[in-house]
Every structure is written in C-alpha cells, then in structure tokens.
Length: 228
Image (cartoon, rainbow, N blue to C red; front, top):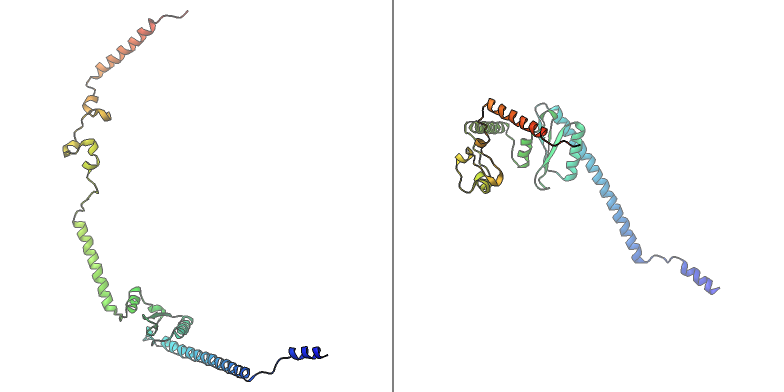
C-alpha cells in the first residue's frame, strides 16, 4: 500500500514554483505586446494605403500634372504605393541609391518616361526635355557629318598580310608588280607558257594532217596479219 501511494504521489504534477509562475507571466505579457504591435502595424498599413489612394486619386484628377514625386519612404510603404498605382492604371518607379533616400515617382500612362528620362533620375539629376532634345539633335548632326565624311573619303583596304610574304615560296622574296602580268614556265608546278599552247597552223594544214593520220591508221589495219 505504501508503495502504491508513493507511486501515485510521484506521478502527480508538482505545484508551480515562484520562478515558474514569473516566467509564465512574462511570456503572457510578451505575447500580448507582440499581438498589440502587430495590430498597430496593421492599422498603420491600412491608414497609409488610404492616404496613398487619396494622393493618387488627386493626381489623376489634376490635368496639369503628368508626374508626381513622393518623399523618401520605407520599403513596405513603397510596396504599398506601387500596388495602389498599379490598381489605378498608372506607372511607377523607385529611385535613390541607398534605402534611406529611395523615393517613388508616378506617371500617367500617356506621359510614361523614356529611357533617357529614367537614366537621368537614376543619376539623381532633374529631367530637362529641352536640353535632352538639343542633345539628341546634336548627336544626329554629328552622326550625319560622320556619314558624309565617310562617303567623301575613299576607304583604304589594309590587308592583314602582304601577298609577297604569303606566296614567297612561289614567286620568291623579291617580286615586282609586272610579275603578275608575266607568265613563266615552272617545271616544278607544271606551268606551261601560253605562247607554247598556241596553234599557229592554218585550218587547211590542220585538216590535211588529220586526214593523213586517218589514212595511216587504215593502212596499218590492212597490213595486219589475218588470223586463220
């Protein structure tokens, strides 16, 4: 009986100590603070989104504005603003080198920025359409002048290697331009001068020679011994 009672008492949960009660109390307080902070952050996001929706709506209704620059904001706030702009059917971009200085610019669809304008904002510069147009015009003039100069000046061809070096094993190290117009016999390569190939006979002489060869073949055939 004593052993049974001892086993029952040992299996029962001991009453919490003072230290355990304090730890549980702190854990409950920490969980309550975390929940309160999450609810506060959620309310802030909702309020910020409403604020951005009003700003974007005013921007759309103002016909004198084609773009709008916002103050630097956090990554979460920029994300919310980008989402509001996308729902409204506008265009938005983030600029700024570091996280503290990054800001958002929104544009109406019909006034979407060109690549040059975006590059200007990325460099931290203000966009000047008149200056950009002048720069583009000067670039076109410079390109046109370069094309005109290229048409006036004949292009010179500079081969990578000299033909005399490339074919030195054929024409030798010393060769003149006249060598290209003079053909000489080269027994090593079986080259025959054109003068040696020319037939100087007349047509009548050639025909007589052909007939003589035919008669010679016929005579040789008649004189051949007949097999029995």
